[in-house]
Length: 409
Image 1 (cartoon, rainbow, N blue to C red):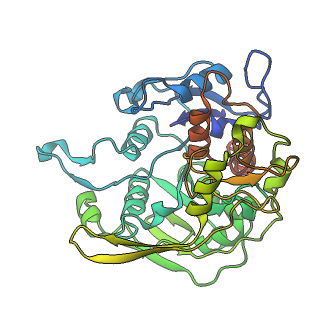
Image 2 (cartoon, one colour):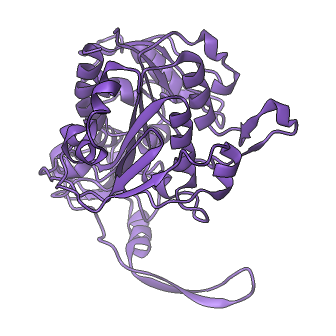
């Protein structure tokens, strides 16, 4: 089987960087790809901005990209491919009958999962590799697990087995404490699917599945199961399903097996190891900014009034005035570089003065090549891109196993 890949919600190319082990680019900005995956089509569209910085960055490094709303793309026009990958937003996946029931079932408009689902229906993609926030497994708050359950139900209907794991990158030696849900799905009709079907779900989660092989865990024993095949109607499923998904699991033939796993930890790369030495002056805090951060990161009790006029005391504990360079970085947000309690503040290793992270340090925390986002993009957008990105090292490690799986087809 060929290794043709389609990348959805591509951003600035994190999946491609990881899968093809990209560590640099040439003098023209073109990425130097060191892997076997052939990316035949990519899509990136940001509806909230006029300038499409992410798509422009992707195009500079890789060439053509479809910079259109994926919902307007004819799915039949997407090239055939063996692997579909992408990091899609966590949204409300609830479904309902359309106004005319003859039209079938409609998901909530604008929800990008349904675009993935439609592509899988049309293209019958053998393998799927997705990333999402960790709260996906628990959403929505009023019906825990419904959204992920709907995804699994869709995959099951289309003949896939799905394995998932919530991975904190720092647990496995990488430089950021970034926890994300990773999903690997495969058609039951593939050679790989047939081989995996001979193994128990418990063995696949503990040591035989793609995540266990790539990111080992301590042996799990207290498994939970549920059968999602019993409810046939997707609308009824959306209305009634709730389940406590744990951070590791598998769904095959409608049977969900899940368990709370603990990682076999690897010593992480620290913030100090990736820090820029003697950063540009513009990243250092002014006296006024220093005072603001002292207040924001300090403990406080503030009287407030809620919408019903009820008075209450809002309290907030203190946090360190700056981030410890001997630890991996905290989870980056899109607001890095702004006056925000969650913003990283570090002491420069050379000057010993307080400053923001530089865009290059943010790229390093996600394991992008230095200055990947530099050309034509202001710092504010560079921070935004990295706050939205994934840790490429996770994708790289899983990509080695996916490469082997597709090669054996």
